[in-house]
Amino acid sequence: MKAGKAGLVATGLVTLLGIGVFWSGTDGFTAFTAEAARRAEVLRSPRSLPAAVLEDQDGRRFSLRDYQGRLLAVEFIYTRCNTICRSLGMAFRQVRERLPSQALGREVALLSISFDAARDDPSSLKAYGQAFGADGAHWRIARIHSQADVAPLLAAFGIVVIPDGLGGFEHNAAIHLLGRDGKLTQISDIDQPVAFADSIAKSL
Amino acid sequence: MNLYTRIALGAFYLFLATPVARSALEGVMSTHMLLQIPLLAAAGVPIARLLPARRRDALLAACGGALPCVVLALFASSYWMLPRALDAALGDPLTEAAKFISLPLLVGLPLALAWRQLTAIGRGFVWTNFISMLAVLGWLYIAAPVRVCNNYLADEQGNTGWLMAKLAVVLFAGWLGTLFVGGKPAPIAVPAARSGESRQASPT
Image 1: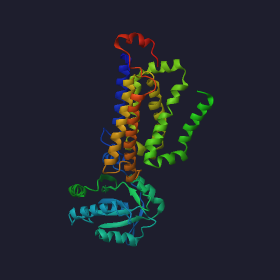
Image 2 (image 1 turned 90 degrees about the vertical axis):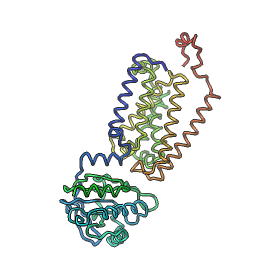
Image 3 (image 1 turned 120 degrees about the horizontal axis):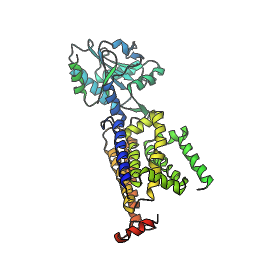
Image 4 (image 1 turned 180 degrees about the vertical axis):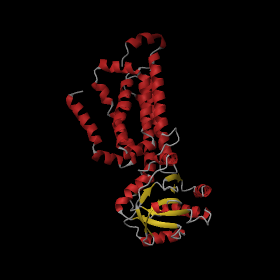
């Protein structure tokens, strides 16, 4: 491999260009996965969400917009899930226990949303909530009422749901925080419920 | 290369771009990474052969020789190994188009252009670099505690990791084999005293 002067200059240029592309493609070498990118992007610029109609464990219909003025913690689940959603449920429970009880419901609420609208009827939502100690008021379990609203809502959150081949699903699990303006402002790991709750408590 | 081969190669490239072939190859992580991407990169190799020898040499000279071409191919191929890039290609048609164009033109073509000018050490560097990248990525996928691609199942990630590790071992064995029982001798065995003459009568 003989490289003359021009060759070395060209190599230098290609190297700089390559590093530049990697830099911009990974948010400055911090986000190598789509999930990390999603979390970083939400922190930089909070996202507006579509107004989907949800239906909770008691069959009551409501919208994410109804929570404006309060902070809202959101997780996505499906009730038949035995793996990651169990951790999600446990994480949410820890968040609820960590939050100051006088703020619950008034200034901050929790919402578990099932993306499996077809199979998760209110009774299975209720059973799921009871399994994790959700009270159905400050922490509601809901499904997306209309099947047509599922894909846009998941896309707005950046949740990718794929069938696992065993009748269930895999999805990028996380705990999401919606600000008082109703925008998605923060996404945390499910194994960081305490830090997540503390960051909410700080902004109460 | 005769006309039929050209048409067949062009048709094969177009076939890879059809929705059927894309969903078949991209539906599974291992075929996306270990079949579709290598095939697209390989599709750039015949482009170098289609050019008349003088054009080819002129193009290589314009690029600054073999070294910048190899570095370009390294950067471009590494980029499409990023889990984030894989997810983006699945969700965003522009990124997918960029993948289909950049792999042949920025990986296969420059490697094919540079290959003739590379000494055995240069070729060995390209091979071992590729093999070690495969092994390291494979190990990362096996050991990663989280899913790195939102569009692929955790099991598939592990499978892909093992496939990459096995492929790295097989390729390394094959490459070692060519060192000891290779066909034509590599152009490195040029004694220093005679290197001036042999450069003019470069056999490859």
